[in-house]
Image (tube, rainbow, N blue to C red; front, side, top):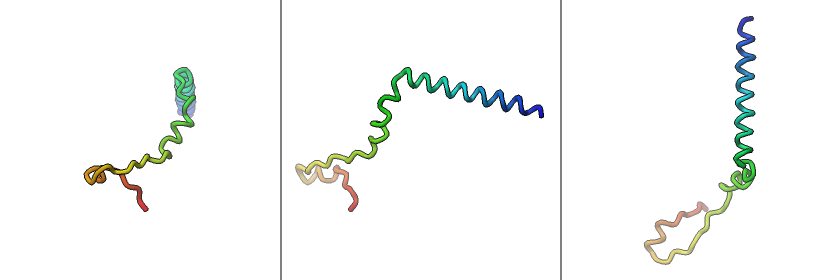
Length: 64
């Protein structure tokens, strides 16, 4: 039964660290643009028309 106080102390330490990191994140303002950052990978890539034959190799193509 001597492990229970150690587990309680570790869990309290981890909980306090989580609260401290959350407070630090809020103070930096990271939470204000979380929705925009979450949707950023979903934006479509802009496809531009190739101006010459050599440019067509550098344009990323979307799968059909």
